[in-house]
Length: 303
Ligand SMILES: NC(=O)c1ccc[n+]([C@@H]2O[C@H](COP(=O)([O-])OP(=O)(O)OC[C@H]3O[C@@H](n4cnc5c(N)ncnc54)[C@H](OP(=O)(O)O)[C@@H]3O)[C@@H](O)[C@H]2O)c1
Image (cartoon, rainbow, N blue to C red; front, top):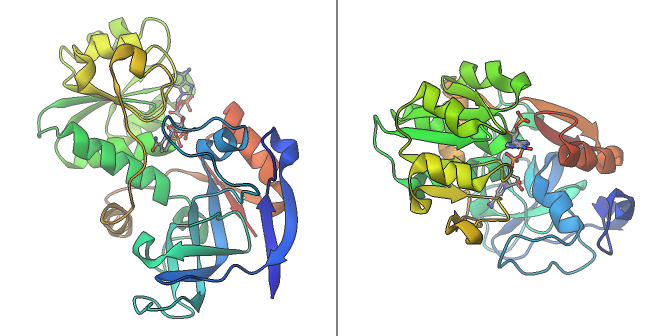
């Protein structure tokens, strides 16, 4: 059987993306194949596509099918899989590309999709949730401490702010002018990012115990000044991390965090970032809109 997938065979701009018909991928041991219902777009998709990698990461083998986060229906089982059966509705992290009609995933990277969760939201969660929980774990703050989430209006930031608040941590969240109300609605204190950030943050709090840089933009020196020391700052994206002695966090798995976050969504305690949906044919536009910031929210493609 064949199905459609987005792929690129060389580094470049959105023009290198093509929609191809390919043989369905076959699940290996411990994997399932999914009939994809939704797959999200992350900044990593266009960064990898242009050849810009996370420090220390290996270059991908071409052709590359982009996309990490997926939601879909199990349509084939690899050897030894008992956790899920054909027809099960799941979400999580794909192995080897999600922006396609069929995708593979390790069963350990999947959780059951609650019926009330839309396919589009389900397909947008794995990366932002795993990243937010991983960094919060490493920052190890206690209730009553103050966390600055830089980029609290973004995918990772929205999750990080909510999880931290639920743990009794006070959250100051940076965002653009247009997203101040969104950050406030999460329960965090919003501050506009950009020049003068240090003074604006100090107007709303006299202490910052740690900074989660979930934006990777703006002045890392400002974030270090606010935290008081580089070892109280963790970035997931800032290219200047090493120059400032700031730890860069990447990698990790969805195990534990995704099930917990989905449970909180079901319970109505947390809310997911807004999703904006594109058909798979418009994946180049979706990646460009994410790169330029022209469209806010989690961008999702549906086959
Ligand atoms: N290392 C890892 O494991 C890992 C995992 C996931 C993501 N990342 C990286 O983390 C970053 C955020 O990912 P995401 O999916 O959350 O992206 P996103 O949804 O596009 O969010 C980007 C955030 O950055 C803010 N921002 C935009 N321009 C800014 C500026 N000049 N100064 C300060 N903040 C600015 C945005 O605020 P407004 O929208 O209000 O402008 C928004 O809050 C990306 O660079 C991504 O590649 C890394």
